[in-house]
Image 1: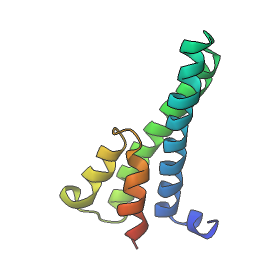
Image 2: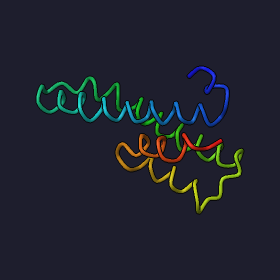
Image 3: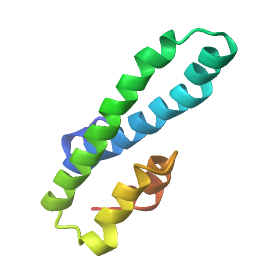
Image 4: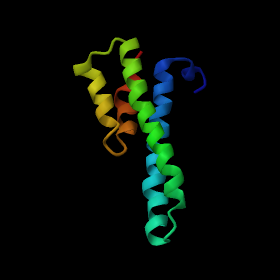
Length: 101
């Protein structure tokens, strides 16, 4: 795993994982605690973290797309679309990012 962090694509894959995990934490942990337990603390903490990771994922996708000369109509739009579909970053990592050179 550490060797893959030396490349832009490896770092994008890590961002995809972190963004997806932050969404899971937000939806399945923080939100139930907020609405069932009447405690919005975790949403106030995890929500902004997820937001930052989402923005970083989108910006880094564009950067990697330029560096790797991805064709927008073939790869870039799919990766960007995955960022707005819940848990799409896991799918795009398995089907697209893991197969890039």
